[in-house]
Length: 357
Image (tube, helix red, strand yellow):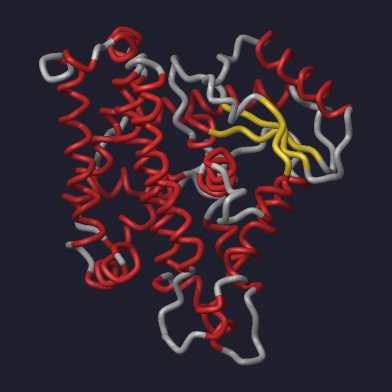
């Protein structure tokens, strides 16, 4: 996991563009401080078979003054009745320390078993909650204390995505793109967009505008980052050893799994910055990061966030804050369109072939 206080691809991009993104870097500093607090708070609560895992803005390095804390106790072991008491004790510590509680979806703030995450990829038992926990474990997760179970479960999940993808091992094509993984990432993104409408109806429009803003920006960001990781398996010079191993009849998939594990250890903005530095025009980079900067600044504003929490959908087209959300999200989308479809022929070809059909 990237240390948010050390130089990064985002720092390099900022320097190259001579840009200033105070909200993005303030969020990184806020996240680093709150990670330190949480790590000290949970010291001693982890074991080799159970780790606290954090999702959301803390995992992305994007915490603002208004951020809540999405977490779970990841269990990689046989069932033990004592696990409930452990989870309740951890919850009490977190909320006593004034970390904001997660939403009411029941996906976070409880226990998660590794069995379903690893074995139920696809099929009727792969519920929306299971898919969400699995994908976010790859794209948007952070461990504040122990990580032995966390690393093991992520590696097992990646093993499933790679080993069960016969096109990687036995296909005749020269492009090394983990399609099983990519398709599940795409399925997650479509699930999120559909579930947004379900929540809108079930909650009678409560927090509709705030959820809409996050869907347009942070949810879309992690999907884009996942696609980029899949495409970089074919494009990245650092993945050449993994590609050679897969093409060798006597090789295997260990290097590709290792590469994917390394890439998914980066926060989504870092993944995006890395690909933008290699494959996008400066104006595309500014579209993406200037608008994400504006989004995080808006999320850090108590007044604007309060408007989005209470805004009725019927008033969205005239509300000035939501107009700003639309403008920011349209600019961010324009940047993604340029990155995936216009600036780089190789990335466009992969997007067209794997991302559309």
